[in-house]
Image (cartoon, rainbow, N blue to C red):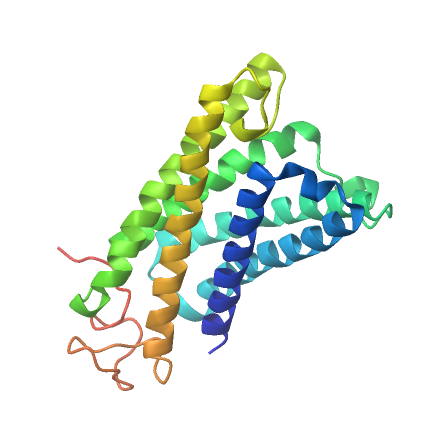
Length: 246
């Protein structure tokens, strides 16, 4: 199934970006090399693209029509992620000294500033709604992983909110790890938040991938006994991700 393959790509991409974040935090001089900057920029762009494709396939192949809330927030995540992709393409084009985007689609600086916060909020809402719609004892691990992702996403929203506050009130922009040296306390606090965010979503996507792999012969339907049931319609109460009923 293509969603399973894309999920694996997301896992690899998150692992790569996480490694870059750690290396860049403790060894920032490594990325002063133009060649390394170009290679890492391309791979980071591919990692972000994999994330966008995941949500597109999730919407098309996995979610049912009656899951209106989850479908709606998935669309929002895709849209804000596409804006983020345009920003990455612009930055990468500057690195390669080429102009691949027409002026009409260049991202305004203020929009670019608030997009990460909206992206973090939409991701948080997605995980909350996703968690609410998971049912079935065979999905306990996925539900626990989703709950962990919710906590990690909330931490990321808090971090992005601080970044935005810092930008508008102190005319500085970037993660707390990029702020001036006199803000050592903020730097120290931001590191565990960033690490926790990457760890939380990595666990979620690994768990989701394992579910896809376990039931790849019948990925969209799952009987309550834990065995794939090809005769069950996707919208039935035995579906793998199912709206909660009272």
